[in-house]
Amino acid sequence: MEPGNAPLPQNVIPLFPRVTADDLNNVAERSARMLQRIRDSMLQPHPRKEPPVFPSNKVQALCGIDKTKMSNLLKAGKLPQGTQDGKGKMRRFTLAETIEWVAATLKPKKRAKGQKGKIITVGNFKGGVTKTTTGMNLAQGLALRRCRRVLLIDLDPQGSSTTLYGINPNAEVDHAQTVLPLIEGTEKDLRYAPMKTYWENLDLIPASADLFNAEFILPAQVHQGDVGFEFWQVLRKGIEPLLDEYDYIIIDTAPTLSYLTINALFAADSMIIPVVPDVLSYSSMVQFWSLFADLVNGMKRFRSKGPTKSFDSIEILISRMPNKQTAQVVRDWIRKTYGDYVCPVEIPETELARTSSTEFKTIYDMPNYDGAEAYRRIREPYDNLVDLVDDRTCRMWEHEEQQAVA
Image (cartoon, rainbow, N blue to C red; front, top):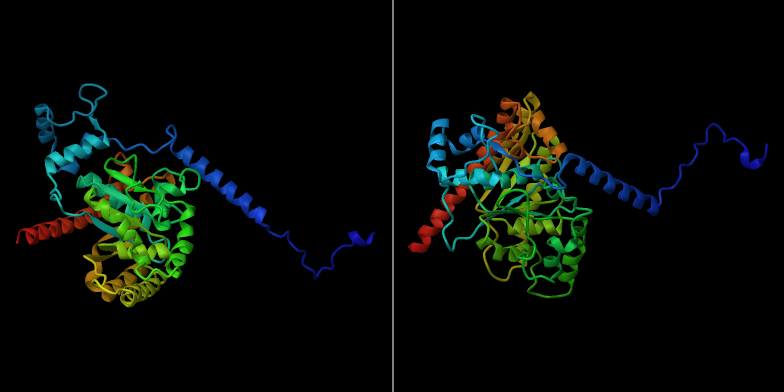
């Protein structure tokens, strides 16, 4: 036996091949191609997500009317007629037509001229607590149920919200379409960035992995020595010109404490903080609040003038609530700890909620779901969250209107 072919002693573990930079590139390229194939397969036969079609009974439920009332409104001819496959068949309405019916029947309060839209940041430093799902459903629900103009800003370099819109953040989003030009200073505000989506009245500023560069750009700008530069206010200043155009701007953040997340926190008028009822999430919330308080108070040292940051509201949203005793115990801890900050709405854990994201869908993408009870159980809490948020905003708009007149 030649020396080079001698067997290894039994107590010696053979070395595995080293993982090189080229190997990492190959894995990254392979995973990007796989995501593209999965997305294309889910969205067949269209290359993009298509808006849902609403049967007449779902339109009636949205509008709070019965079949007779809808029939009378159809005969009046002032509202969209939808389409029918034949006489006596159920009518179907496009998303745009459905929103028109909601606007005509429910008459949601409109934002008065001169009033600004509201910025809602959905944040938590822990992953897997439904931040993206919450932000996406809230945005869709506000556009559908309250006829609002909504913009969603994806600040997560992983692009989860962007993916839910049916867009591949790795292959289809250029850095110039994200908030990065604002961060770099090549754009003064975000009016360049909103793009139309498949959902009526809901626009998107997408994310891509290029957003990681913000974590180098912002501190570099701080070290350049501009005394007046407030790195935590870059996003808020960039959003300001859009507040005349949109009723709501919803920001989805990464599950980390980053420069972009800090900007999202300081841009917000209101915060929604999703948390799942388990011990690890509860412990993470303790850290979140400690860091959150330190950030808001710590920035006092950098401000030469102006008020300390405050919020219209902060809602801790218990999400993925299972019917288990251990989860109920943690829910009680959350309620005892955070009191009035805990949202009265809870989002239950359901199989439908778990599986919908695998099809690049949200609850509002599925008005024709066959299981009526399963759909109602997850849809109603999101409806209630949408109504809660918009009712509060309407009261604030009314107060602002009264203050302006006084």
